[in-house]
Image (cartoon, rainbow, N blue to C red; front, side, top):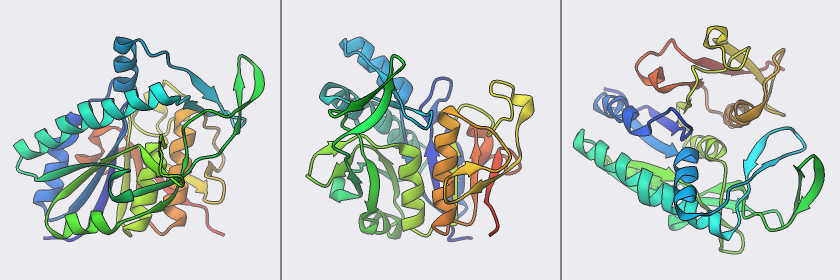
Length: 272
């Protein structure tokens, strides 16, 4: 038996069913590991928004990555999708597999604390604009006490955005960065970022170009000797933050990562 702690972030992009990963999580728990699950749900948010008639927009940051523009209506949709649709499915499936799980958002007991910027720059229709009404934030602290209490009682936390901003209002946060922050706060043994591609790819869209080992500069989160953009760049920044915070083992992979330890991309810190 082992007492290792693994933080698993389940991606919510198209083509990845987070519920399908539950048997692998159950296997880890059966082995004696403690597991904290974080999940996103971008595809489900988009589907629910379409059903409710809430337009969705993406903002391009000056660094070249994209984020969801979160106005009040979108924040409501996001909360409904994550807390009302995805999370109950995950908790129910884990229960069916014999894993007692507890569903939480970052708002509960202030588990995820965030800083909401009053304004930030983004590119819209090719123009640089100052966005003032985007209800998103960056993780600034983790109240790990409730998570530890659940783990100490053999319960598996299932956590998702939104987080609680400094003014007490809920804000959207990046789930990869949240997973990294939780892993650091709990001094996790490993962080698994599961997504809908096999791992870091040298050529986007070509699974045959999987990079088995990716070195990142923990100061910037940028890969060394590799040009990576889009959502994977965000994951690498999250991975870099986890490594900088002392998490010794970080892997980016698809849903097979829990079954096949050798698959995916092992992310390592650049030696100083």
